[in-house]
Length: 310
Image (tube, rainbow, N blue to C red; front, side, top):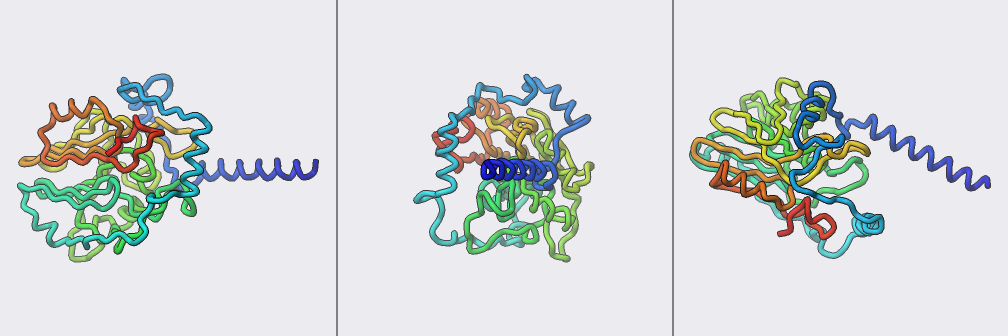
């Protein structure tokens, strides 16, 4: 009986500690409130207390499947991680800035982190340079070994950061912190400082503000809403996915993709999404695109509707 009491007491303490962590840890971010929450609740896809995809998207998994997935992630399996450091090309900032305004520049930095250059402007998508894409600093998905890891200080001057949704592998607390601290997109003193803008899915601004981003730098968009950065028009388009960083805030912020229409070129950054009929609509409304980026690296038979297979 004493042993059982000790076990139950230990479990209670662990649950309390976990609840406090999710409530107090800055990595979790903030929840939409006030005017931001009112905007979310006014959306046509906000039903029954949470945001929904345009198409029916069943994400429920049997408990046995959940246990199987967790065990596979903990145990690992052959072919899931590279055996040797991945060779990368060093980023050439001078070459980047020599790209003609009428051309598209692209540098893939891993997963959904991409540098895009269009009309002489530089955009950074879903930047994640932290050690782990995880709720915790000590556990969870860890970045692969590369011959050189990208850092905020190595970036060229960035005009705007595009944030598609708030999952940890797309919105990194450490990276946003570094961008704020440097107050510019690169650390070199010979580079002019820029007022860095954050163009995000509606609701993600709550995380950014909690992490210290000036609200005047944040533009939050609902589906089909637009923003402009110089001559580039940016439209936030629907995807088939979901959001959430805590225990109870799934579907509390919006998710989506970005269509960039420049003077000479057009780019579609697809972020995370299962296959959706919206792709055709986006192509008809904003294409044809000179470059389309669609993810295919997080696929699984267990969640075929929220990620695409290659």
